[in-house]
Length: 231
Length: 289
Ligand SMILES: Nc1ncnc2c1ncn2[C@@H]1O[C@H](COP(=O)(O)OP(=O)(O)OP(=O)(O)O)[C@@H](O)[C@H]1O
Ligand SMILES: [Mg+2]
Image: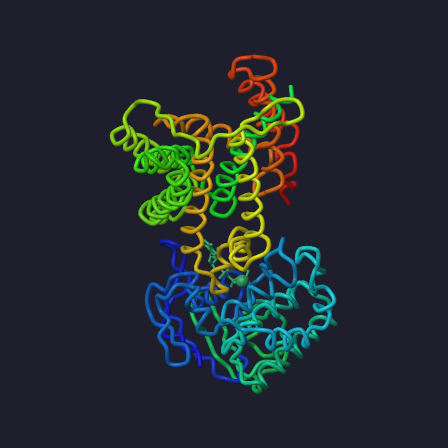
């Protein structure tokens, strides 16, 4: 579904990603792990077209997206749940969802479906996003991305700073989405969550793909976690 | 006294329109548009050309000017955005320098095409409205009403339409706006054009009262900045309140007390200083988080 082929990317003259290749298939959860600063978020931004790819190519569902502006990439069907949520804080829940819906001209049907996944948002449609609790904000960030009916969902540390019950909810959401055939690229630092949702795990070390492993072959004590993530 | 109040309301209404334009460009694009006053001037100067083309029918010429001039000015602004600001990636410092350059380009262009003289534009109609205490120019009343109507439209655009939603989202986080399929370049071009168009429409409204001149942009620029600072950035209500305050102060000090306009200007400047010291976020602006 999403092919990342020998991508180089970075900020201005500094290069963060070096010849990184990955493929995310439909109905699969590919987890990305790596230390702070390894380039996980940069990978997400490069896929979105928010950070220019200096070399290599990106292909979504057979369409080459390398060099496309971010708004065009989003329109092709990539939903983005950024690190730190990045909601439109002064806008209401309703308006945040509206922006997601407008991205690919989705209407009432998609909105209802998304709200059925997160009933707590439906009760707070008029509330300003900034005033939501951390968990509700994360739900909104995910809901906003789902409003695009994405083929590929990029999630950057969606469980960061949340309490266990919220993490469980997000985990279940990820599993349900996978079942509907969405390709999910998930940056996640918690080993337990990775082991519960991942099909495959990509370990990134200093902007390079160090290893890609089948999740079934990993357990909490696997050496990769210590080596690439430092847990 | 009441007359001064009316004069103040006229200034306030026109100033509010101009300042809202400046506030929009700064709010959404983070561009400090030093050439804003020149868009105002262009509106007035173009209005002279358009009305000049219809010597026999001032009302028709003026109505046409009211539509055509803001559109032309907006088009020039969009062009400036695409050719200059966009290439500078909207970096704050380079864009200030660039808009200063734009200021001189527009001013000199006006000087060479329009000439150095102040030229009057005839009001589209001329009647007096008999208020309980005195007669008042019907045209000035119409200016106040028209400005209020336009401000209402801007407010509705921002808070009630999808275009407004897109503009607000872009203002809050342009990177996330792009990630959600918003064409930020298009939004910026539109906002820059809209901001310039608002200044131009304000100028067309006021030009029958004040005459067109190629240097007339300085005052509205300064006053708009004052209004935006006092009102608080990105706060439409604040901008309106501050425009009312400054406009009325202008009217009261110069018409009621017969003080030279400089005094009103000094008072406004003092007010800015006070606001900057005691409420840097503006009277109605929210404190930065
Ligand atoms: N906007 C930016 N401008 C310049 N350098 C940046 C920018 N954003 C990130 N970097 C640099 O790129 C490198 C990778 O950052 P990135 O955010 O991709 O890491 P990460 O793997 O997501 O880390 P974390 O686990 O902390 O989220 C870091 O060295 C960082 O300093
Ligand atoms: Mg990160």
